[in-house]
Image 1 (cartoon, rainbow, N blue to C red):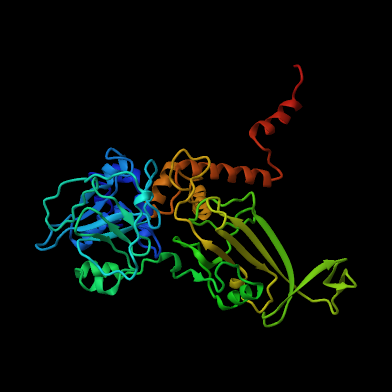
Image 2 (cartoon, rainbow, N blue to C red):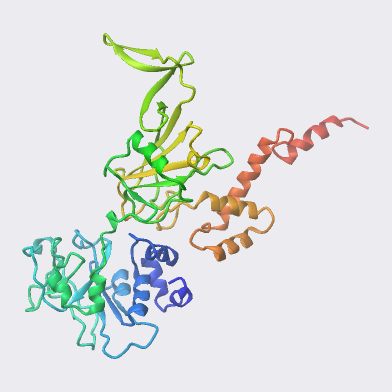
Length: 466
């Protein structure tokens, strides 16, 4: 997709695809990421890989004149000649676990192949006739006899969450929508190409990336001892948080300090609720082997332990006093779109001297819960695209480059270097450059805030009539 991006971006239906799908850059990242999602751009690439036409079906939830219905019901052709005997692949846009509702956006979360065959199901079929009171219409007339034609106007549709079946009540042949959970007997009778697709594990939510590690206790953050164990076993941290679905995973990353000493850990999860975020700092005495921690408190310039004596809390000084202590800085926040999905960032200060300098610069980023697939847009944005923060390192580098050349030229170079991580606009670069200049002026005690402040005392000293 990256190599042939120009040809895909010049597709005749590119404008419609851009309105209804993520950007081409975002799709390329998802396509190369375990746990990423597909879109119409991915289907175009699929045509070239299989060298087959791909016919995609989208239900007329909001009528046959709906923009999504008229745009996404189409057949994509491969760029090369289709070999003889290669039939069309039929794919249905499917929203797992949720029936289409008239008057709403049918937010699909996966593609599934439609097969003109019957399969044995291990589970009984469930009908949802009462849940859908509107009708569908056949979207086109195909001359290919191998393609399954759906009369979506005269059939009631029922979706079974367990068997993933599309059931028609007025036809002798049932049409099934199959996913990776389909029984083995069905897959053996399929075309080898389609069978290979079904063999792929589609459960992305529980499949962490190579740089992500699954949590030992899903649904909970790690204990203090577990955090230390991770630091001990990690030699090199990641440069940045990788893209992809994050479900009860953690990443060990190199802490990045900006000019103000603040750490930044940007990710692709969307907008975090910084207003409700909390920071917890705790001090511990640690053993030489970093196996156990003991909480201590600073009272009257001494390290003490807390005890309960006759119902009264007292702080007893340690003897002898520890020569060094360890401090855990933990930052908690929730996702704005779904406050059940949480993140915790832990940095450790005061590690013993035998710990390498590289490990002392590590931070542990934990994600607790399941990352939602629908991200929230930025509160100040006029666009409907989900908000994904640009890496501060990229912005800082762009601002430094903008000190010596035009901002537009900097933007062009960064886009040519890596359009996926480049700033979203030249305004981002210019704003960062202005903030950097202001900070430098304030740090320089011999400089004024602006030129007018420098000129004013000079003029005042010569305010005399000649």
